[in-house]
Image (cartoon, rainbow, N blue to C red):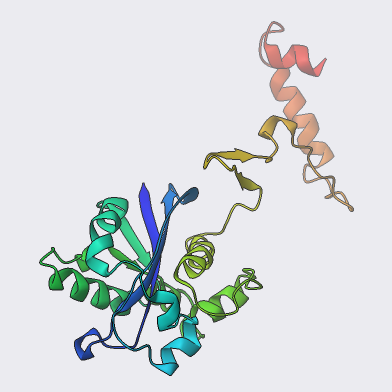
Length: 231
């Protein structure tokens, strides 16, 4: 199963008021395991960056000037995501922007039924609790030390860790290789050593039950395997 965990940064809250996407970040999961494949692009919005948006992601017009516009990266983005499920936090926001940008260059919209919204998933799992990406990261002890400001690719990596916790928990011993493969230092089942109890459980079979069982076994042929094992 292939999934794409992704995030966007924008110049504001509403594409219908002229706001644009300025960054897209996405990472690939296969069977809930990051493969190392990513998609990351900065985009020139060709409009003034509002201070409120800059304060969130730190991307200003000087940095974005000369970066490709959305239509120049649209085909690469669609090729990367293919028909995979899109895992997004507060998905309505990102899908609204993406579909507005796609519509502006006459490309098909992304269907909502292919989107998994981790915000909705978190609210269902923890009703009444804070469900922002920051709050969920703190709940699951996901490292935020590298996150000075929002960034689409970094937030996608954080979201991937949160998402895996939401659906059942990460595998902490699973290690990604630099080639995008994976290795594991999880011990094989055959090497596991059972832990002994500090206080052994009391015997649950009485002496009379043990003797009755021995009498029952003797009623069978002496060639029976269980008789040989109990001799």
